[in-house]
Image 1 (cartoon, rainbow, N blue to C red):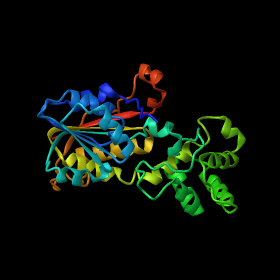
Image 2 (tube, rainbow, N blue to C red; image 1 turned 90 degrees about the vertical axis):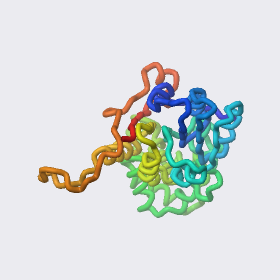
Image 3 (spheres, one colour; image 1 turned 120 degrees about the horizontal axis):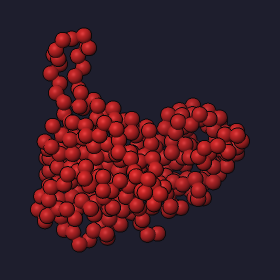
Length: 310
């Protein structure tokens, strides 16, 4: 299957990075190289782009798309390891970092990857296909309490307990192996009235399982902090999120690094001596235009937050 992905908030991200032609930039989630291609076009031969992706298929597609550029380093890794990646390349500071936290259209549309509740496939959802832990393990091996917890916390699913109960009961007869088997269980667990209202009944459960499989929220705080530590003064970080859980983490981490003082409010002056690390450039996140949402409905929930290193 051809790797296709429509980059969200593309021009906004390029503007946000304030690209210098001889700068060093990191695309932490290179994907189909939509953002990367626009970054590298603005670089001189002296500039460098570091493209990271844990999905080897995405990385190979990016290499093919950008094969005329000689100033790109491709890294098959998780951006959680950005510190080690840059150290191994002998890079101490960079001028800009981009994180696009969404699942790519290719991953959703490639039936074999098992990300989508709209297509029947083996339960998988691994962004890194070399990992030996998949959605199958979550669905068939987690306890009812563990399933309830991740569905509620990562999917904000109000029927989490009931869905978890139905999953555990169903797998007693035979393992749950496919996405459609799981969809049928979810539909059976959710009351008919709730199924008729709002998004697809499996949407929240699939989101929760995907987040758990890939540890998406677990890695985010450290990844943001490590990334910002690697920015040079006036360097920028731009992060696109696609659901409220991610956006909340980014917002809170930016807030913490912009206002790190932890002195009690009643103290007349700061005595902790913690200085701001960044300046937040987006008090409210940037969102796609109506035109972009119409052209690419999957961009609807995207939010972009930008910060600059002090």
